[in-house]
Length: 134
Image (cartoon, rainbow, N blue to C red):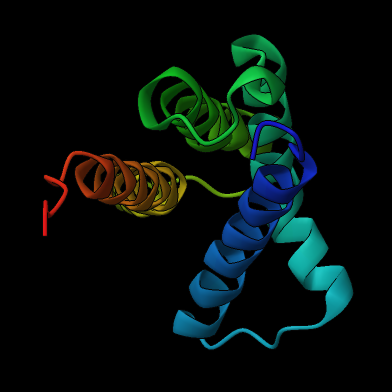
């Protein structure tokens, strides 16, 4: 993924937009492109700032080095932008936002790291098998 950092960036965008859409539908709001954009943009902007701060393109799938700052800035920065631009705020919404975006933004990276580790471990264990002398 290092050679194609746009793929993890796209995953982050999809995850954040999905978070906004699920939140809207759970509050029985009608979802249209303009309303979804209005709800999602602060969190997308926060995530973009997280990418810049963490230099995410260097290791975009790293759960802690990249995922942690992207999550903190997408959730926290997004909430600050939301409130600063007249959006609503409630402590339960902040808690849900922090938890859900942590699971999504760090979670997909943790899964990708696990898959990469297992693949490399499987390859290295195959090369360490003893050769049959028959």
